[in-house]
Length: 169
Image (cartoon, rainbow, N blue to C red):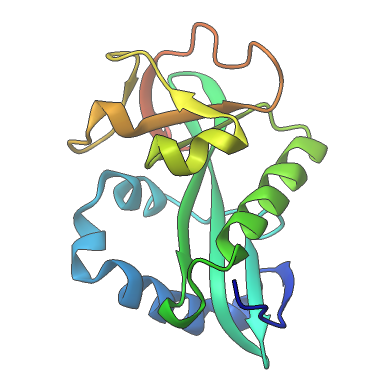
């Protein structure tokens, strides 16, 4: 594994253009049709919990956290997590992910969800949610809906539609 000199910090508005380009490069135009993207359209992500990695003042990776409701339960939606191709498989994404989870826990958040691969996210405490309990606004592979309890028992009994916390029912 090659060492990359980079720094991490909170995402700021100054990073928006580079983060959006990173997402375009990583996920292409299909990202707009994804269920998680539809939720994120409902309002802003939490910049205090969203992180970027910078190398030579350029964004090389980012992770975002968005406040959501699952039914009436407050949670965070993690993602997208993206790393520039030249910097993949060097632990940068994992580092940002852990930083973001630690910040969320320190801020008093209890539950984080995402749509992703359990083998990647499992070591961070993510596990599959029971089928039929969490509903996204577009089709998703039910085996990829994962939750991480930042407080033991936080996912117990969680049930309902996922929507941005700013969206009223």
